[in-house]
Length: 209
Image 1 (tube, rainbow, N blue to C red):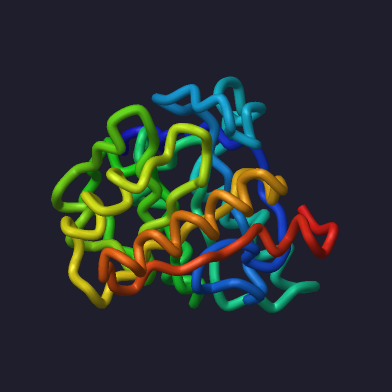
Image 2 (cartoon, rainbow, N blue to C red):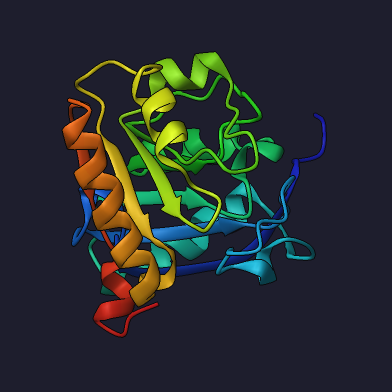
C-alpha cells in the first residue's frame, strides 16, 4: 500500500463564511499552504509558504473534532491555492463525513475535483483561469484592487453564463475600495451588464477570523 499523501496545511478553524453568496453560513475552513501568485492585496500572505505536514486522515480528525462543538454542514477548502495540492482524498473524506464542500480557487490550476460550490476568484494582472473551472463556477469573486478595471469586469461578464454572478468585493473593506466598487457597479449597470453584485468581507465587519 502506498504511503498517504502529505498535505501542507496553514490552518484549520471554524467560523462563518464571510464572503460570497454563502455569507453567514457556519463553515469549517481548511486553509492549504502554498500559492502560485503573490498578489499585493492578499490578506493571507502567511499561507503562501510553509504549512504543517498532515495526511488527509489527520485533517479529517481535526475537522470532526471541531464539528463536535460547531455543527457546520459545510467545509471550505481555501488557501493559498488549494488546487496546487492533491486534495482528492481529503474531499472524499469530507463528503463521507457528511459535509458539503466549497473550494475557493484563483482558477489557474485545474484538478478534476467535484465540489458542491466552486468560488472562482481570478487575479491580476491578466485575470486568467482554466476554462473547465470556469464552467464549474457557482460565483466569480473579484477583489476590487487598484488593478481592477471596468474593461476587465466587462470581459469576465462575457465569459460566464448570465446566471453566474460577478461579485465585486472591496479590498479589505477599505473605504477607497468600497467607493471604487460602487463606481464599477454603476458603470456596469450603464453598460447593461447583468448580475454584477457588491459584496464585502462580513467576517471582518463582525470581528471574526
